[in-house]
Image 1 (cartoon, helix red, strand yellow):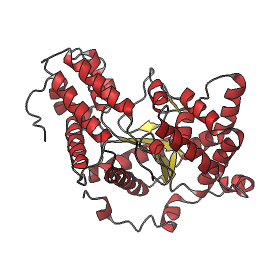
Image 2 (cartoon, one colour; image 1 turned 90 degrees about the horizontal axis):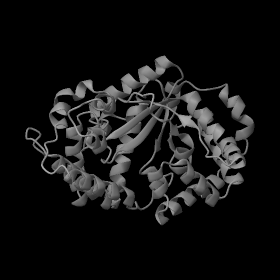
Image 3 (spheres, helix red, strand yellow; image 1 turned 180 degrees about the vertical axis):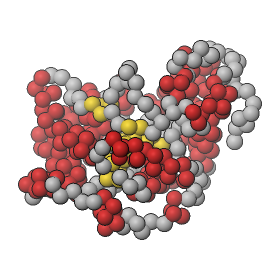
Length: 367
């Protein structure tokens, strides 16, 4: 463990961050895949205990690098390693300058719900080395919880989820960011040495209302066709409630089309929501070839994410995903979708019927 009481240079913090991130990225073993699944399952078990729960889904890594059952061999994401090298290169120009943010982060992390909000106007740091830039180099997992509609349910979800995650030691990267870095250093070392890490990866948790995610899912086929006809980029904005992050006027919304195509992986969706997803995906796969969808994916992505999908491994995994959509059986689902919308089950009863109350607290304890 790093001694957080001593001063640290910008060069030192960038090199330590980059090494941990690159070591983690290069260690693509079966142990790592199982470790990632352990993290995902832990989040899902916690989410089931939230009173407004309507399912979860994952986006980003590792979901775009595995199939829908989280099976497969993890490829090395060279883009991540390139960014790590750039971070080190940028840090060296400051040589032995002290990283002034360290003492602030230790004092103030509990009152910093969003590093960007607090750090952006701070005069005591270099623009290129805001804590968020360093934290962004650390691996994390993007998980979303679907909640019942209504602002009051969003707030209830946020409060309950944050408290439950804290109990098991799972947190976003900007909650005690220095400790998060130490955790990732330890995780990367454990994986490299073939040991089971006992700590969770940072979690990037988002909250989305049931009706909003359902509407977005159902809009994708028409949006893809419209964008193709108009010669435009397919775009469906999504601005979820994120733990500890507050949207600002200059923040661009996520493009749901990219997430839908690249990585969207549902867990425990209610039947009517799963039916909507199946119908949507089957229609997309009928109306567009895998190569066309790959180009749409890259066009809707950020430049960095688009470059990732030049990887032969990721292209292969994506085409396997489209093949799964082509094989979806939607018989009777389309005709019943409207009826199902009017018969949404009570989420607590549904969780119970699916075994949601059978999990014991010790399943969430650290190994």
